[in-house]
Length: 253
Ligand code: 8X3
Image 1 (cartoon, rainbow, N blue to C red):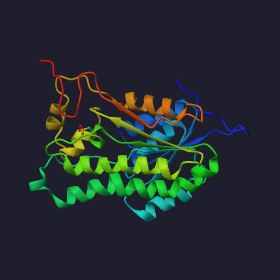
Image 2: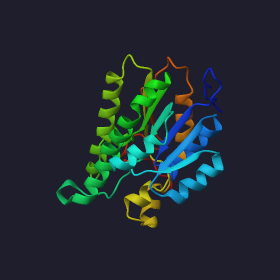
Image 3: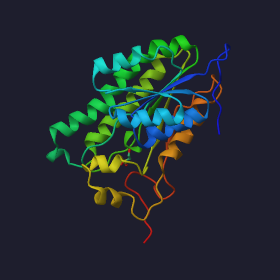
């Protein structure tokens, strides 16, 4: 259990979580609320985030990270911010480069890379003004490694790594920490989305493995953002015990 720093005037710090309608995003919103943050959740599926906001005493605002107007309206509705968790993103398909689908590639690049830029750009002024800002980018082991069929996703997530590292350089000297958390196998809707709703195929990804769950990553993000302001954790890579690399997985049975 971690505790958010309150401002000198006693106000609670504000945390924004994108892609908060499920999985790591929803778990992170819960963990940050439990740590004492005032949490603002954004996602396209408004009914889901509305219920989540009610549960955690936060605010829900519809957000499509790929649309500049949506991002700017979202940012205008959040005038005070301390922590930005860029979680929105995801994978679509497992096609080889030779058989790539244009729309899937565009969707992945727009959500994971372009969307992350739009949201970050919109909030940098607010994060700086807070005097104690923090950007947490949810990457993936796909941000460090490649695997066959994964190029649309791994290239986008490698892009996230490039953005994280560039932000660290560009924001040096400003009161904004930058962290990337790179999870391996986490059982969420991730694989169901990747395989267009094919639940059976998604289940096979985690067969014989005790995967991570959203709460495991949320716990790490809550840890990272509650360290003292002078402590910047650059990167955390986390996998289940049974996963050494994207492709090296030990399965029981
Ligand atoms: C999810 C991990 O290995 O499916 O970000 O790319 S992997």
